[in-house]
Image (cartoon, rainbow, N blue to C red; front, side, top):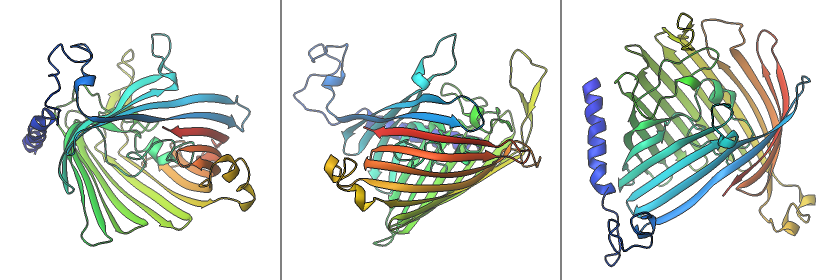
Length: 397
């Protein structure tokens, strides 16, 4: 199995490599290896003939804990995305994240600067495109579509924070595509071979710390991941996700997930479920304390259901929030969410078995600009409830 996976990964890269080296160019343009271009040899982007765009998204949040702790503003994310059509069948995309300012030095660990996506596509037809690079692992809805201006709430669902390590990306290669068996039905898929998660799996942090290095596989075994979705008609989508990989020298992890999205006019309902099974073991969490081991839980589970109702009050249409302000398509949404996440199912009644309750309201003058406010309660069986008011602004650009 291991050799077969290695062969598949190598084949994907070899097939895609020649295409990536042959973008459509203007025959009269100087070679990018010459000194005659606008930037000489130091700046070659002007010499590459491609349709490129730069965009991204930004959010800023305010948290007001209701237990007496200090309120705070936080500049959570600034994402820069660059995409380029090298040819009608050749595409490149990257996403770079500055989190909490991204100021990284020896004195602070507050910020992060990281690549969330960097991949190249070779499209053969709608049903089959080859992809290689740093990819989003296709597990569930939120991990693949996690942009702040798309999401209706400030925080991602509890399951996507505790069980699925959103944002979860990995280095590898694979395939994706879609077909229309009937006029109304669409079937789409993604499947990748990647390095896989590491053994840094704990009840306190879930799979967060197990997200892999982009430099080197920790064990030489490759992981398989994929998602298959069916939309029988416009407004309904049902998906199934899976993951299988070795996280240490020889122990396996399996993950199964299901998700659905249903849109009925102004009402939208979505939900996800995920189950994680490991073969246990332990790891050293702190290199300065090699004798202290963290036990890897044998199973985790999480789910959520979220409902949305979109509207816009007639009394606001002729105000600065609506047509008077130049926003004829302005909208609001009421949001409610219930979910649970248990990062160690073998131990019941602990702080690692949490429940989320959320209700909120947001306003969009346009689709890519949203202000949000919500009340969130995180509860656990031992009474460690955390109640807070959250508000934020998110902009896609």
